[in-house]
Length: 268
Image (cartoon, rainbow, N blue to C red; front, top):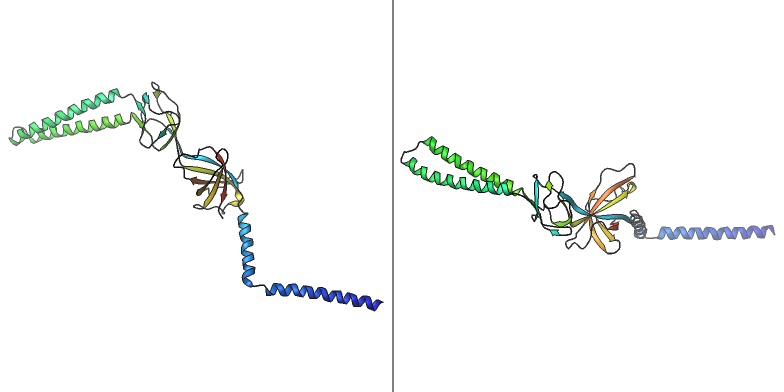
């Protein structure tokens, strides 16, 4: 009886060894390219899960409070909230009666100087005036021209133009109010839009400038758009353990509003 049990145990051990050898042989017989492929797929799956979808926010690419380069009193505000403006469009005009009057005086002086030069050139050719008197006449006429250019520049400062193409967000002052150092109105640029993302520090180095991403907008739009990484902060915020990333998305028709929440998936 004891011999029979030992025989059965020996047979079971032999079967187990045979099974183990069979599995080992299968592994050794597996093609090398197949094992490499499975390893690459494992790395790809790991990379795909490395950067999760993150919350983000659409912001204007430029947000500027526009002020006047000179003090004065507002004559006209030519735009209002929500207006689309182009770079160079007139936004505000200040009262400029003094500059307009001064420019007229400068023009009259310059015209008189030109006639004086013409008359005295003939006198100089006939030796009726000296070289010094001729030079004084010419220099005075040039001074009149410089004064006219100065007045034109001062008059141009009374007109406030848009430094960018965008949308008027708000106006702060009305006609008749005094303009000092405070801004007159706010204009934002919405093409392109910036996408601001706060990323955990453990993902630092996984996002590089110039890489692409997919941005999904929340309601009411619920659309997705391609974006490009513009800035990756090089300084981590120690308090929160995060760093900032900025992307940009094209918005030529102003269909996407700033201030909308979104989520972003970075390409691997």
